[in-house]
Length: 622
Ligand code: NDP
Image 1 (cartoon, rainbow, N blue to C red):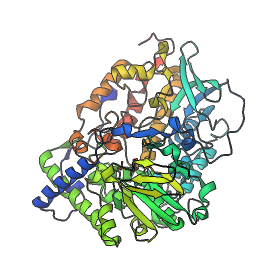
Image 2: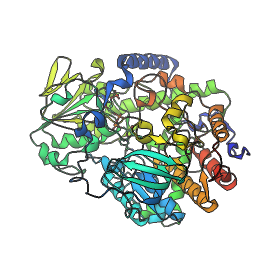
Image 3: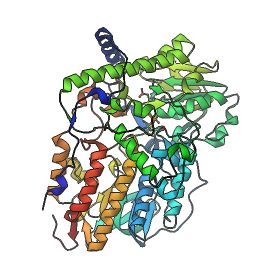
Image 4: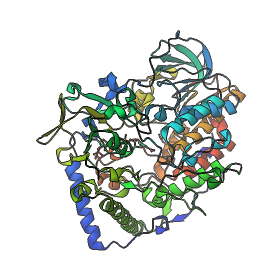
């Protein structure tokens, strides 16, 4: 076989330059030294010996926290044993886009299987008050060109996004065959039939000639592994299962059920930052249990008109999305169409998302990077001081770590909420978080905070959904289990999407490919690729399966220019970006030259080399 799939597209011959960094104020060497020391102390204060083991899995341990509050109960139906062309696991944007792109390729029987009661994925589950996407709607919402929809706000509320997900599903007729409130429990390849048997928790055992797995990355809610959660006698739930039957109101507020109630919320990540101002408005008293403060940058949300975004031109959304991807990937662009706090700080995302190949004086670049980082963090810390009137509360809300150690957040409502007399910030950094839950409330140090309602904004297990959770065994050719093989050899893919021994299985997600803060864009490119693979296999009467050599080549490509950012994450405050302080990012490395180059590589590969993974159905085992 040729190695043309190895060929990188023309990578920018980019010299290390601080022009990619935000303009920064002066930060003197003594200030930098002091900051380094302060960051180190804050990290040491927060690192816990139990790392990621500090959490409990809401689904496995507390069915209650993971149950679907948005439907009366699953629709009764008989188990299915029929055959479809493609089974798509997951009805979030990944699955919806896979379905839509398959339809565009003329595939007829596409069956999306989804745990939730409708399409939407993240946006199905996360309906907490204040929920918005903090990536600009005009680049985050996929298929705007195809659906003709123009978002109403620069940052869309969750409900608008969920409705858009359903709009795409309707437009591409994905409802007809969809199975909701259904979890896939096993995939088993039948070599003779040339199809997968898809088993589910509703007793289905249907066949699909192809499977696209789009099970998401941050889907399984987690709770702190502290004693007493099950003893709490007040009301409690996780933000991704908001209980409006208890709180009243809608994602826009008006939670009359909280009148007279003492409410506690644990967690101040991207979710907490959005929900806390809403709870502050409606609870009689709100206790915010914070362990690590987020960085909270300017939001500046506003209504937009189609004219504002040039939506009268054909292809406007694609152009805007590509422009955004270039900028947040650290590539040069003639103009910044989105122009927000993400793009202004894009140069400081380099440690989070591998971008293009950098040549030149790494040391000089890192020095400039650290200055820009310090200036940005100083600006964010001074934003707290300017907004929060109580100096002690302001001090506790200030983040002390480098910019991309924690996921950046954005809000103009968050800090003002702490100026209310009925909001109390409880800093739990010194006790490594809340220590115990009792029948009456939450214990931190010597104080019991008595509560009527306790909300967990404690996030999600990372990278453990679907196939990677171990709860969805995939038996490929010869009965080989995918995770068993990967446990021995490490994950093996071509482009992160297909694997030897697992024919006609395409996995979407961040594994061994490229990523971006605008993840719906990444998923769409993967969906286009998946649909092209299926169409090519159909046309050739072949099956999709990369050779082991193709996997080796891809792993070599990933390793060849892998950026060394481990030292950065090793110095970061703990979180899911660095395996709770263990010093490495979760999961295997991605494509080292960033998403723009990766998409170009995929396109060129489709044009020239796709035949390499199309194997005759009678081919001997590789
Ligand atoms: P995170 O995992 O980011 O945050 C969890 C929070 O819970 C952290 O503040 C954490 O503190 C805190 N916590 C955990 N255990 C304890 C404990 N024992 N005591 C006190 N505090 C505790 O979850 P989120 O739901 O906020 O966000 C998850 C991801 O979802 C985001 O990173 C983002 O990718 C995505 N998201 C995206 C949005 C968007 O607009 N695009 C909006 C919301 C979420 P600590 O930091 O110390 O660990």
